[in-house]
Amino acid sequence: MPDAIVAEGLSKTFNGTVKAVDGVSFSVREGEIYGFLGPNGAGKTTTLSLLTAVLGPTAGQAVVDGLDVFHNPHDLKQRIGLVFQEPTADQDLTGRENLELAAALFGVPLRETPQRVNDLLDRLALTDAADRLVKTYSGGMRRRLELAVGIVHSPRVLFLDEPTLGLDPQGRAGFWRIVSELRKDTGMTVFLTTHYLDEADGMCDRIAIIDHGKIVAEGTPTELKDRLGGDVVTVRPIGLSDQLEVALKALPGVTAVTAQEGAFRVKCPSGEVLIPKVVAAATGLGISIAGISLRRPSLDEVFLEFTGREYREDEGPTATDRAVFMTRFQNARRGSR
Amino acid sequence: MSGVRRWAALTRREILKLARNPQAIITSLLLPILYLVLFGQGFNFTNFLSSNPFLTPAERAQILQQSFLGAPDYFSYFSAGMVGFVAVTATLFVGANVIFDKLFGSLKRTAASPATATDIFGARLFAGSIQPVGLAFLVLGLAILLGDLGLAGLHVSVAVSVLGAAEVVVAILLLSVMFASLFLSLGFTIEQPQTYFAVVNAINLPVLLTSAALYPWGLMPVWLQTIASYNPVTLAVWVIRITFFGDAYYAHPAWVYLGGLFVWAVAMFAVATWLTRRALAPRR
Image (cartoon, rainbow over all chains, first blue to last red):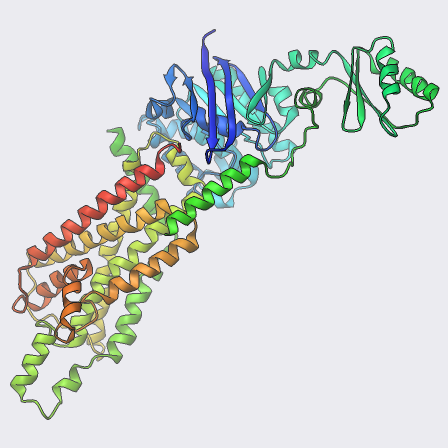
């Protein structure tokens, strides 16, 4: 199957110093749902902005649907759909008017536009609200409208930038159900960024984990979880002890022990079997254990494994966030002079 | 064809948004109306000159004619100036809307579509330039109506030909294109609304005060006359005054002033399109 997206050595530096994306290379096959997973400021949105010609690169190349992104931005925009993480629909227009505008901008034939708009409104359960101003829509309705605007021209590649941010679980599930159906019906390629590990796990054919602008792991969700080598038992002793680490490594079935954030992460095929042995080993050494937990292989664990830290969705502003803020602040100041 | 359709769709959007937010129209009209109803009535010093016992009737007539360049009284002279100035206040919102569209994300959506910077700029310029023509005629109607109500009002002293009326429309349109281009370029380059309004205020008052919209021409010092004669508001206002009061006191016919306005409009349009293209290009 040919590649719908190819990125080679993509880099983006803000203010000459902050590397938001640092030599990222990957490819996405046609018809695939490919997820970019990472915390705030990891470089997800910057990568997506590069692939959609919203941003120009500092270095590297990208090809989307056979087009060089940076040499054919106008042609590219006609072939791709883009759903931003923030609302972009006109609040003073109705849902229908927003879709008609998007259809005109993306060159949907005039004769086909009414039918296309009605079909989308129907598919996204917006028919009843079609002629209401968008400012009266709920959060879930707005997200569905954003998706409708993004696909009104039947793009071959759809980019979704954290599209379910702020939605409740029911809204998120509904949104992804629609995306799955669309992919099934049209065969479009989907590139998405997300904060939500469960979404990436459930939706994506393949996932790249990005951290500090670099891809640290890539594969199918199953492959990534398999790389963990089974269950992970986290042992939190009162005070880290070299003796305990040695004892844990010696336990039967243990494949790896790493010390992280005041705890030992012990990989093994079966956590239930190992836990009593861990307790016995610690007791034998006279070491008290403050806590012990078992995690099945999950993307949370994958993230921890490859980035060395827990996944948190509400991490504070990063260096990239601050750099982007400073760029906008300086632009605003320049504009006011 | 697709470019025309994109432009038409974006223009429709602008007009729908404008129709759903009449506050912008009311605010645009407020300043000229206040000037007509308060300043114009309170400052109509024609009566003072007319009743001056130290002047002969011929001298009074000469002073009035030279001060107001052929207009029968100060209010008529000044209200033609306000008709020109409404183009400035009405186009102010086209730039503000760009900033709000940036803040609310809709400009991001449009910029990510195949619409070119020319489509985006052109639609806003078109919608923003047509509106002041209508508003200018509202102000004109109000100025005439005030006279019918027994207050100081606009008195047109020559027969207005079809060509003259067309020249008035073209003058307002060119002035609107010029200021809409200026405010659009500010809107595309400034990020914050408070900064935008501060800059616009810093532009509006000097433009008004260095034009011949308010002052009797004959009372202006020569240095201010020199500055005012290049001010685009003055050029538009002169076209309107020539149409309403005749060209006896003007150095050139109306088309010369229209030519000057055209140069202003083209220059500002060129600068604004360049700035818009730059603002909407992928950030490097």
